[in-house]
Length: 459
Image (tube, rainbow, N blue to C red):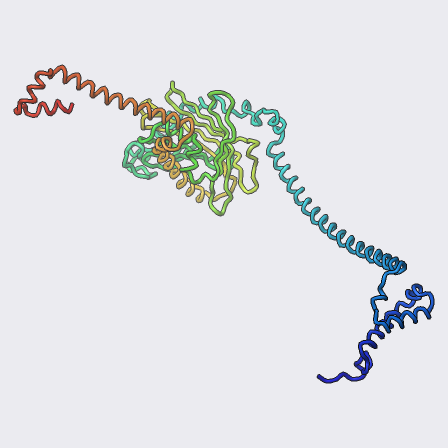
């Protein structure tokens, strides 16, 4: 390497280690001259002691602890500690401030979330919250229960539908009377003098086992109410009712039901009333519709008729949701009657009248297309589900209706076994009367008995 120039050297060229230490120590002592002057009272004493240290090379004596040096170092250490404490306290205070700031931000957000939930809870419960805390029902059944008078108003539905069919459908072309009828709105037998409407009802859909009419609702909303008349010869009235009131089973066969929950039952015994929450799946361009409705059914054994009524209501357990559209104006009535008076045997006719306001302005052509497609499909799914309801109850059903179905099936199976045993006992008795024991022995030995013994043997 190249030797450094004279200007770059901080030490003399002929210096040794002794001169280096001497120079450094002198600089340090001169720097803290005041401190060392207090330590060494006289300059001569300072020079003498310094020369002794240099000559004897005992540099550690500079740092030896005498009382004054120890006291001085303790003061310096205290100053240093105080400085460290100040810095550490500042850092801790900054951390605490940052933690407090972020905590306040989080607490603010949590507080806002809490207020939001409380507001929803208060809206959900409203004034019935206090009553709910003492065990009183939040739903006023005395006010919103469907009364018997409302049900009895629909006793003449089948008579009304008979008049409606005679007024709007050519009976010669009535497709509900022929199993191979055509789906047409046009009279094919030449009768053109039949009026097309009755009581503002207009023929909408006509199928072999289904006829649907519609008319504008009197509220002036521009929406239609519908009346359906159907005949199913392969389902019973009892199963047709149970499939509609069994929400556990409906979750399995009705894919359009996004949510279907039971809110509350009527405390009045044998009322058969419930509050149901139902979310209906709509196409992608629309939000889903949800319903809260009061449902009640009545079985009139005198008239041999079943009534099912639904009507929209409000319940604090299911408030309105921002992401769904609540249908507030909805009602329906279904009247079911068996063919032969036995509700357990296949063969029913029913009349369904219903109305709901979907809350959106849709072109009449779209509404017509949806109604013509959706209603028959739903009723056909309901029919197929009714056919398989007994198998569902036997495998996994847990409702009261399913328990009744299982009990009835077990009783029927026991009766079949009993009838089988009675049948066998009857023929054994006939055998013993018509063919005594001695004749039986003769028949065994007679090969020309023309198979009579063989027949009696297997009776």
